[in-house]
Length: 319
Length: 214
Image 1 (tube, each protein chain N blue to C red):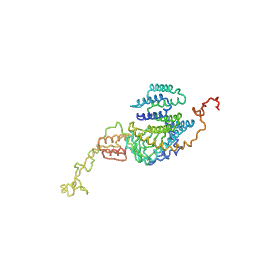
Image 2: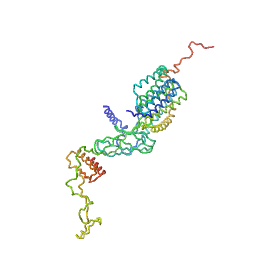
Image 3: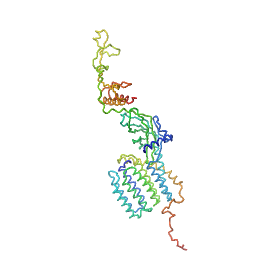
Image 4: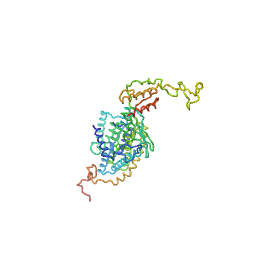
């Protein structure tokens, strides 16, 4: 109830107060913060501190007590100078890049946010948050640092990183300065693998012993010489008998490759994607060569994590 | 849920309260100051391993004992001396229910207020400078308890050094503004409410019936 009320209020604020929220629109990287897009408000403690400060000032004035007034004014002035330090923590901070290693849908993705300070002093207490997740990091003066944010993923494909907030209560916790960052960046989310998928299908029986990979290690036969063939492959005796130049050809049968065929599965689209994802992962883990046949593209045969990653990427980006 | 307070930051808080009480030792009865120092020592001993809020069964007797000490040494807890001494005692006792950084901030702000109370009992230059120094220490403490330390002694040392540097710089930058505001801040021509001990409440030392000697 409270969250819905807050969301409605925020939506209304964005409609009615574009000047306050214009920086919430997505924008290309790098994003550089400056004082006009850094906002400041008292913390809950800061509100109590303001009441206390007012009581100190009124008390000092009422008692006509000059040392007490001096102390109250010193505290007030220090607090006010603290506001500038608070805003200064975010000023000249630059978000340079957003990256993440792909994960499967349903797993949290670890965003890497690359920040850089382009001036000012060290910023030891910066916090980045989005919804309920937050991370704390420090940024050296004129240096760079990475902040890591764990975000939930729901569906496959390209996921916009969305809006997040950078804020700090430094130096005294009386005020908090914040700014909203909404970079035009997306991260890749692989499809979720099927949990109880059937075992990985072994090679396609129709292709058993028929498809070959050239060149290979096993003797395959003779063929006519083509320019560029190495001289050591020339079969001299058969060439003399045939009165034309023949070369020995070597090849490997390719039927060991597992064929993961989209068209062979009779499931709905997402279920097919989920099963193929599971099989790609299994083939990768078992170090098996495999081919992936999708509606628009035929990948492989190939082997290893890099090939599996490209297959998972194609599966993730299927329309 | 506020971030927990580690034992080193807790000890820093105890040191700040001891500093604050030091400025009030000139008017508070020594027995009461001694009692509060003993309570501070118990708070420090209690948090030698871990900081956690004390059970109400311990806090209540401590509160009653502090009240008893106050009534025995100062008199009534109502009035300028009694109320101020009670506030000092309550700030010390607050340590026993503190386990988070929010509590530490509240205690620091209360200590700041209690520094101002000290000027009701003396307005000398030394006392003014002392309480201004304690106010600076309050800002250093606020900085340290707001920092996300790792709970180690080395972490506290690092935060303390940074706090001294930052708070020193901020306080130094605020001095011209303070002086300017102090000079030009409008004063009240008359108090907003009755101020006990103020000159307008004073009575002549001589009885009104005394005749001037010729």
